Length: 236
Image (cartoon, rainbow, N blue to C red; front, top):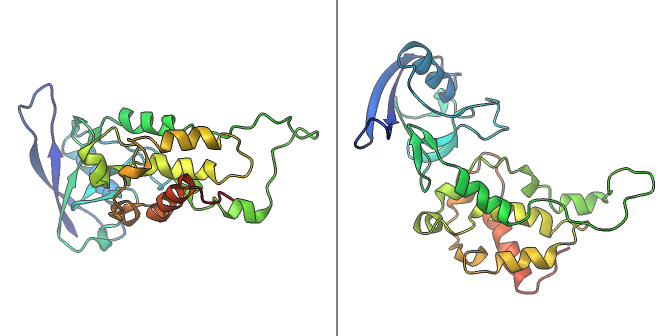
């Protein structure tokens, strides 16, 4: 079958303003949108810029807007697209570097701000192995450990569009993962960070983040649990 692609193009070194380019590619229904992009770059326009790495929905590199909704190009199948024409655009809320490539630095700066690591000063176990958890304690954080930092949730958030100093859903999801980890000892510091003006209270519960998460994380629920923790609720 033939698939029509409308692709956002913008090279700040050459273009005054963005425009859309049109391509037609031959694909099978089981092909991915990423396969169509690869075909364009390999056979039609080698200057097309986009990110990709694992191509198996693990790295999150190929997040973009597909027909207006954030998704991973490597996970979106041609047969699941209801229209004969696919429009591809960069993620919103981040500066475009070129074509479908956006500057992810602000996103990762917000991620780093919430201390995305286990903080524990207790002596290591005598056997030198990892700090173990009981299964119920691990289950408490199973959902939010699935984040692949693709940025789909944060760049679908109206609050983030309005103010990029908002930490955003992805950062809060990762803060949740450590806040509710019974081995972690940096609870008070993370709560201080999340309780700031740019923190969790900027969330307006739009549910955009949950809708677009390629790992099906209950993002809005995790944010609500963090809000409850900041109000004195139990963490464990």
